[in-house]
Length: 476
Image 1: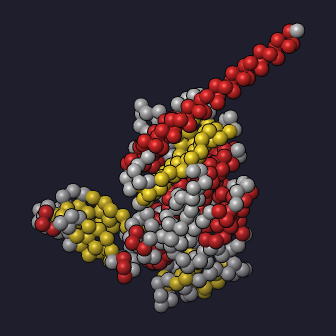
Image 2 (image 1 turned 45 degrees about the horizontal axis):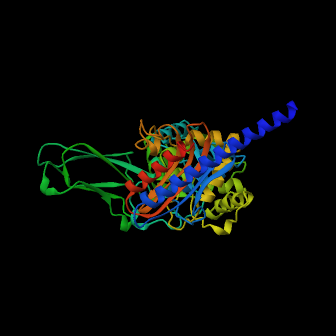
Image 3 (image 1 turned 180 degrees about the vertical axis):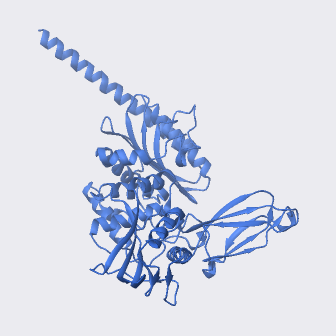
């Protein structure tokens, strides 16, 4: 009799919990439906998918299979696919080799800078490799100084990138040899009123020139403008307008691999190493045979690249991860974007979805040819959550609501989402997305994707997304 009573009580408890759970889900659905009906920016559309990872069940879907342009939430797809590769933790390497033989302080052969698509390689790293090359057992190179960029094809932009985003620093020229992300920082400072302003550019190199017509405290000169003749692929930096305070602008250079090699060869010469070739540098692939000797290596950890890729939404880092993903997946020495796409499509298939239902173009989401869905993003997020090693690295790299990265100035202290949302933003004209993880007030972990489309007000889209996150956090 006691057993029957116990089973009856347990049954009642389970029913009560299930009823409360169902009731909570219904209330959440009603509140999200109301948000979509009343708070969605006029003229726009949205797809949502919300999954309770702790309870292992779907909480809410609205047009979850709607094909949408992801903008930078595409970086989640790239990151999770890359993290799923066993080789992910291998560092990004930039190497200096020489090939030939050394006799009487002279290299009878060539010096090679071999690119491994390190997006975090900076001026300090370059000087370190220059110093290492200057300590080599030769100071004269009888052959050439080569840049080896054979790791990837010669397409320097992703499919579907916009030509008129040039020369913005967020759209770099892609190459296995990158110096300071292929970007220069132009600092303009005022001098005496009416005089020409002072301009400095970093990193220093003779690869570019500066044409400065900016004036100090002269309103008639117009707004400050820093650009280059990008329609002509010129690296003449043009500075004009009125300067009232110190300002720094960034812009890309054409092209990254030439900027890298020109600056490397120039600094190597300044360090006392002479090259007898007519040209300052050239491009060629290193043959790794018995004549080839490794001289120096610079390494950047994969986690560091991932952190910058997701926290700060760095497009170059995403493309570097994307192309290296292609190399890991195919085992090929020479890779193209389609090699990385194959890896993503395979994971999509492994997760039970049809890769043909989506359009994949690049790894960072700059392309207007990318088309995925909230359902796909949440499926990838669920997969990552279910694999501890992947989730640990991904979670560490995601922006935290109100704290850092691209969410630093959203979900501030005092709002429901403060420190509870760990997600990737994604935006360009007409598109605003948010996808990642959040933790409810009851401690449940939730994967979600919100993909706003055709919304010209980013402020309104972000406000809508923050309210959605707040409702999920308060859901019970």
